[in-house]
Image 1 (cartoon, chains in turn green, yellow):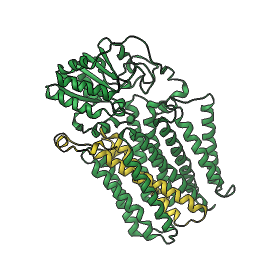
Image 2 (tube, rainbow over the protein chains, first blue to last red):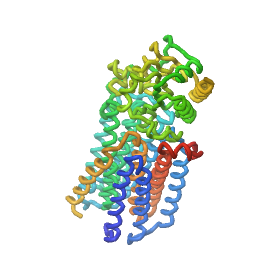
Image 3 (spheres, each protein chain N blue to C red):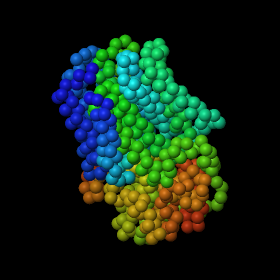
Length: 464
Length: 104
């Protein structure tokens, strides 16, 4: 089966280069779309090649039917998903990819005999185990983001011990497979590794808190990449090796980059809850006094401000208020105010998510200012309008050691002259902790559904 | 290909993978993650190679793998394209903005 003809090898090489160009393109706003299309084209070409060179080519009709089914599910899912649900969608797509890789390796294990080199068998076991981790981990991630289960860290007494036991068992079984792949009846050993991998994936993601789940998506993405790379080695296919390694390496790098933006280490994100670090998250609504404002009060503050900074959060997108917000910004711009959007790198539920959500409302990406570029300007801002965001402006990140978000760089909204908070209720944000900024005397709260409040605010500003 | 050649390809790919995205702006983190996610969907290629010579239970497993891998690959590229087509620049965006971005 390794008899890949030279012409096909050359085409695989071309596809590998296209994947590199795709990733390169995806990292710049002007080239991103072209990059994605190059990647898609290369993937389609690569997957059709085996039909032209495999010596033994059975099951063509069922295989094409399976591709058709997968395409239909993928396209419908990708078209129906709302931009707010994007993190779940990426997790889901990543999970099924990991699952597919694990199944491929499982089939391959059934074919290699005892004579296969040990490294080949080790790569097979690795693909089954890590592919399963990715699949189950992504499923739990999906459940957390889709509110099918609590987004708070789930831990229980024996979890760390259980995790270690399962991990060791997976390694031991893998070693058994490497020594003698035909030990145990049929594919039972491979299946056992897969089941342990699934359990490991669940145990890995359960203790991760809601605010950190996005980092886990990125990490599992890198896992799947490495799984595919190992699968490529097992199958003797260079393209799979290169493509998987590219995604694995860039995914790992991206994960570290994002963890850095949250001021956390990846180990702390994964295992922090096990040490009982984030116990401060009470999640209770407070009854301390706050200053509330009407839409008219807020409109006056905004209409006569020269410098306004908007801090949008996930709540804005959930309420679908981003279009109304853009209209408000247009009106303020016409009145002569300088308005910018301050985007925290992890605003929304996935790094870069807020940029996508605002792009959907046709906000030009030049108006979206990254945290490091805008933080020095808050002190000179007359009004900061916080819409549906909470944790990313919570001063506890600077002042309260022990808070789950302590050490995360935040937007310095507290330095502005006035702050308007649009909130649905006093409930805490995704990280589950109270925000001192809400009780600050320069803060005015505008309660209500973000879309409704934003509409009232827009009309009030227009009426002035 | 011998083991050292495989290792060489692997190590070089690691460096290329890090290098090509090292300058990504945080604006594009979500589409980049989604696009990279779609790229590892080429495991579909592996699923096809394996399934082409299986039968019985193996065939069923192989076909499931093909469905899953196709969802990953096709869904990933389509959803990434959907996100990226919304990233517009200042001037033309306002005038030509139709109903497209509001679709859900």
